[in-house]
Length: 201
Image (cartoon, rainbow, N blue to C red; front, top):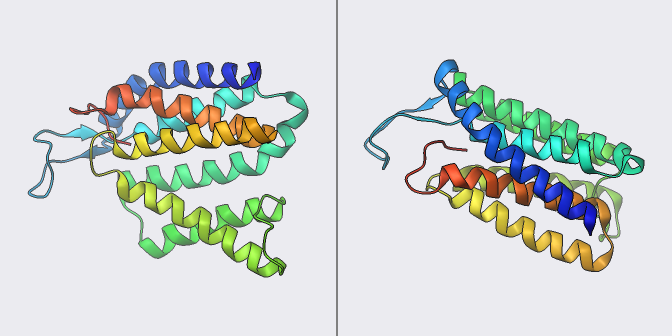
């Protein structure tokens, strides 16, 4: 439990401190959400908050996670890095939907190849298919939720909190560590994302 608390606190502190940096980088790199007829905000808002969440999540795990389990994190971190890179590229220059979807599927396949997949169905190919569908589906669902201040980050935080609770009760240490890091990172980001948001995910 101490490890979970350290990961959570570390991710929270990293997110609180890195989000203002991401906001400045958003302005500098031109990764800005402009006002529009279908948007509520009346002035440009940087949209590089996902980078702050990613950095806080990764740093907390690398620093506070048990070193003996660090090898199990490699495929998840590689997949997360790929998806985050695609998101930043899409925010700055735009990315064709099919290319973005292909990249997300590749990220999911990295997890599958390393053995990170669901295993409740009788046939291996079904487990692989459900795993890919789940990862890609949740990724895009959270992305689509990012249309209201605090919504996507709030949903992510609530989900992470319940995953952390279930993992702690069932001895799923890796899942618990990931959930603790995500919970801290989302809460730290939400400080800047609640209405009126000064940065978008």
